[in-house]
Structure formats: structure tokens, C-alpha cells
Length: 231
Image (cartoon, rainbow, N blue to C red):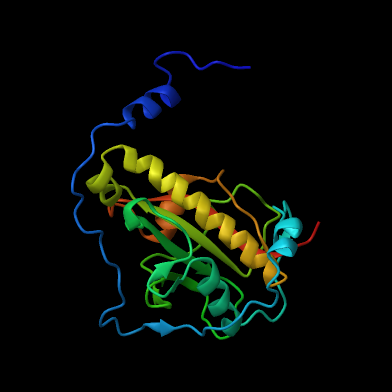
């Protein structure tokens, strides 16, 4: 078993994010809404194709090779996002430290009937999409050549917002939250007869540029292409 050396980056990060300090009481979490945006796209609500948690858990997989689902429509994207990352009864589908939800959700659309290809941001509390500020071309960021997809979700952390409530420990909380989110995405994908491939190994700079996030305090944590396994 490898034992990290004292002063190594992983040890320093863990120690720096240990308790304390904590900001108490934390300020109100930031709100991200469509507001008066002229291009808000309201998504449909509905049920997933399958409602068996056991089936979703046992069939969950992380494919190394993926192809687009034929005929995937915007009407299916709505329920998928609603049950994985959305909000019902004023409560999100995943936990977040202090209910702050510092992670933002972007979607690069390739093949979804009814939606133009490009970058969007998903607003869980409004269950809607707004156009993003970047190209959405994630190909330069992916190092997995066999992943083609209908759409790719990107979870990006608002690190300054996370630190407002919990100091450097907020960084830990963004990682935990991202894990909860991606597990939901994988289970909801299987309930739709799709696959979701969680990708933590990607090129950060091209991903940041594709999302138009440079200089905005948002850091991509996770890429999640969605399609169907072709292995």
C-alpha cells in the first residue's frame, strides 16, 4: 500500500480543508435563475421509462465505448433531468452541504431532437435550459476517443460560493456533491434505457474554454456523456 509522503499535494489539500475554519452563519447561497433571459427553454416533466431502483442499480455500468441513442427527443431529456438533478417540492434530488448547491450544471447537446446543438445551462429549480456562453465543443477535452453521445453533462463547481460558507472545506463538499449528482445521472439513465459514462479524466483547460467559464470562478469537475453502450 502506498503511503503519501508528508507535504505531498494530496495530504496538503486534505489538511488545508480540515475543520476549522467555518463561516458561521454562512451567507445565503447564490441563486441562478433564467430571470428575464429571452431564450429560456422550459422542459417537460414526466416519468422515467422504468421505476425499479433494483433494476437501475444492477444494470448500472460505465461504458468505455458509446454511441448516440437513435431518436432521443427533448421530451425525454426533461424527465431524465427532473428525476436526476431536478427539484420537486422545493427540494433537489441530491444532497448538498447546507443546501448551498455550489455545483452548476451545463449540457453540451449533440443529437437531441427538438434542441439545437450547442451549450446550455440547466436550472434545476426552474426545470429549464438557457443558452450557455461557450461553444460546447468538448471533443478537445475528452481523451476517450470511443465516446460518442447524444449530450454530455458537465458539473462545474462555483468554488468561491462554496468557500463562503465553509472555507476551504467547501472544496471537499463540491466533490461530494458531484458524486451524488453523477450517481443519480447513471441510475436515471438506466431507467431510460440509456447509459451515462462518468469521466473524471479530461483536459481541464479545453473543457473550461468550451464552457466559456474562463475568469468566471467556475471549475469543471465531471463530464458525463449520455448515450448507449456500444461495447
